[in-house]
Image (cartoon, rainbow, N blue to C red; front, side, top):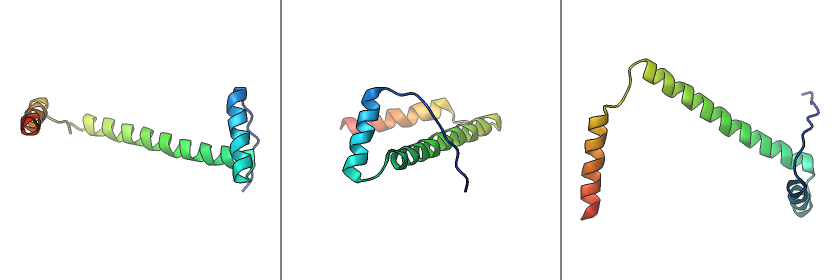
Length: 82
């Protein structure tokens, strides 16, 4: 797999933290940056897909009746008050 160089600016404190992490784990900056970026992209991709799925459900008319939701929550609150 080919790789591409990615460059960006960040504050010195973040770089210092990254360097401490790299030293403590005996891994280089690149290892930690790739790992962090991969986890971030997975999370954000999941969020975007879940949002799109929710919008598609709403567009298809698959919506909750707010009065039923309210009744359910009120009943739960009453049961928890005891």
